[in-house]
Length: 63
Image (cartoon, rainbow, N blue to C red; front, top):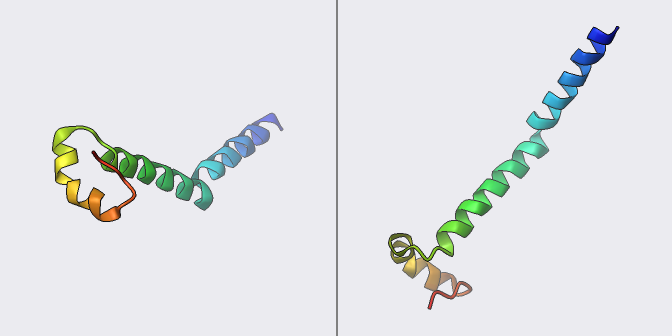
């Protein structure tokens, strides 16, 4: 009986991590990190390549 319970417990955890809402949340979180890092970067090569985009968006001050 405990073997069945352990299998069911593993199955529920697996479903939790592979469920559609969890996947969407992970993708949105990672996309947000990438966008924030690139758009607000002070690193010169990244800043210079996205400089015009930052001004075009008009809500991201850069200098």
